[in-house]
Length: 403
Image 1 (spheres, rainbow, N blue to C red):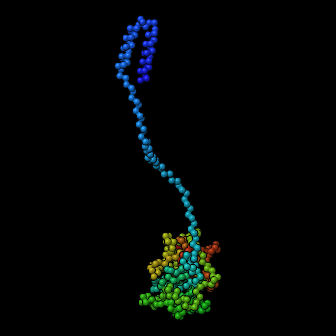
Image 2 (image 1 turned 45 degrees about the horizontal axis):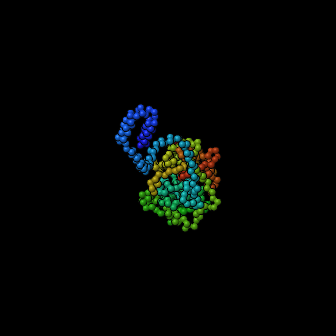
Image 3 (image 1 turned 90 degrees about the horizontal axis):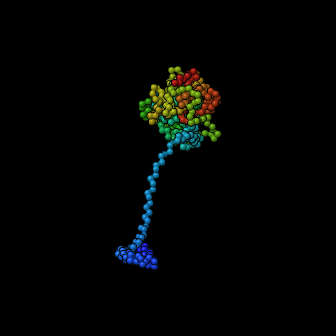
């Protein structure tokens, strides 16, 4: 619209200029014709006012779309680096209490008690023995007739069950019992044994003389199958109940010090192989064999051609430590039964066996009331492995072949 107005204004200006000019008269007719044509053209054109611009619609509210979080790119696991091997922390030492005859931990402190030393029959006709597998220390020693007898030493018999068969004492079994200040338990004995018991005032139970006889009984099955002399039995329960009623000392002196020393691993350093060996107690005498089990670390015991068995539970007798001690052995002068004297005091030589190895050792015992002490060849103290011990006493001229 503004442009049309401008055009009309320009036309009016030109017409006015022409009319006022000197040439108007000359060109007037033509100008009038042109003017009329122009007006007609302009008038006839379909001029319309331009439509107003549409009011812009408001923009719709923005919708904010939260894009999903990007999928994390999996991080590859870090390459495992070889970690330094952790050093095994040393195990804490058990604070005890310990069984003083084995060095093994126990629930109750029993170290103040006097041990019990029980003479056990080892005649072929009397096997199987009863309760022998629970002895802390087993001594095997010659008696007359080239057979052997056991002295089983217990620090605690509370849960042992049947023990036997109980047999007669010898002077050297009295000695061995006294080395532990033990209550000595037997049934009968040689004249030399009774003389030693009386002279030394040995605390004892003896079924034959009747002292403490309520602690013993004759097992009817053994009596019928093995004979009267192999049938005498005691029990842990009977001993526990009757000993306090006998008016005897049941505790060790307050200043009593045990001579035995124990360590966790008693395998001797620089030892020689000893996985299998047989002990001969004398020429043409009974033998006992030992075989080492690497899994258990124990020696299984065999005698009379088969495993040495405890009749209470059928278990084989085993030991952590085996000691073989040479002692002077001789017949009792004038004894018609062929009884022996074995010298358990002084000193001598022997072997210590543990963990499949053996070493020579020396033993000593100062007197009748003294304990045994053991040393290595260099004079240092022998330390036993924690566990049960089996001690063989052999003649001085006997040797042992180790394999």
